[in-house]
Image 1 (cartoon, chains in turn blue, cyan):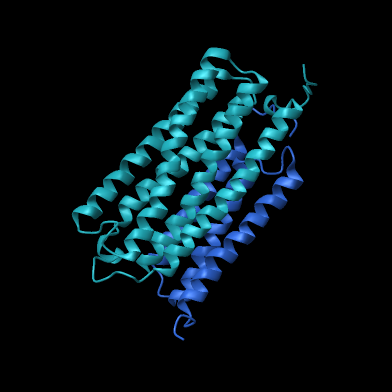
Image 2 (tube, rainbow over the protein chains, first blue to last red; image 1 turned 90 degrees about the vertical axis):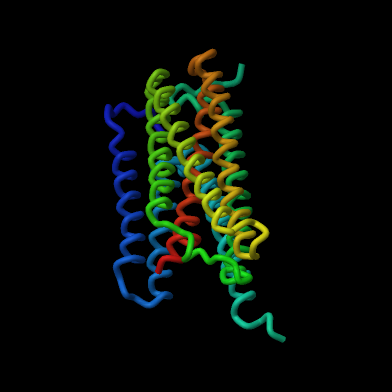
Length: 99
Length: 199
């Protein structure tokens, strides 16, 4: 996190362009392919994760300051988020409610 | 006076600032889990329409794309604002922060318009479990954006009055983290709430 001296925000512009491309790739995968539903969900879910990581590292400077602790905290939060969301949806939709 | 390390960007120059920024990351970790619980509810009630309208009847890709582009661009302009801050350019910082807020306000406007459209089509919070979870998830996000706009206006006023100091720089950096985070949440709303319905 040394002071920056470049005169053009190359990283930000690159991050923005890639974000837009990922957004349109998501729309493309949904609207213009005939893949099975589960395959499409995996593709667009992965694109979402890539775009989120891009924001975290390129726009939010996650590795600056207390970088290591911030990384651990955010990745643990993501782990908790996946357990909560995927775990709940799995339990509530996979037949466990019918006893 | 606290020890100041001038080799670092303004917002990291004091120990207090570094701890405040780190503390905000901890808060964002909790926010991630908060939104995960709302996504969990939404995902569990995915087809609980109670004979009411379905998202396939209502969602319009163009409107969602407008909201997505507004928020994504505002995240980018917010990054540019911080980029100017790190070059000690107060004017650039303020201009790009204000652009960010205008884009954010545009997002809120389109989202409110979208909700009004849904209610007109008979999809209210009380209509079905699906729309309850939809409005709670989207409403929580939209409320965050609205609060963020008010918060950023307060920071802009401080910047205009006091200029760039380690304290105002830290406050600006923290609101930028918050703003980018809201775009991160939107990426998942865009993908799992909207696009997954258009397969």
